[in-house]
Image 1 (cartoon, rainbow, N blue to C red):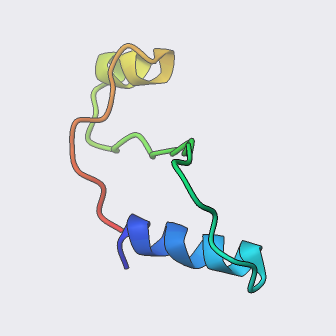
Image 2 (image 1 turned 180 degrees about the vertical axis):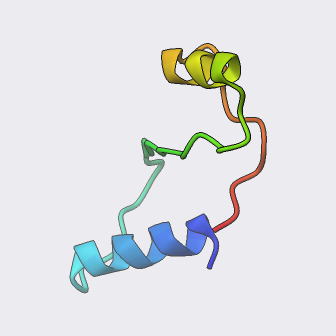
Length: 60
């Protein structure tokens, strides 16, 4: 299931049968990704500090 489908499902559940909202909406999503075990100590430290960002696609 794609993240778009998961967001759609969660929104429908939260609306409890209410009419869909009209107009543009803003959605903020915070993702927490695990640091790969294959990272070196230096690369791991950079990732923890936020200097190294994820570069691969999410696989849900």
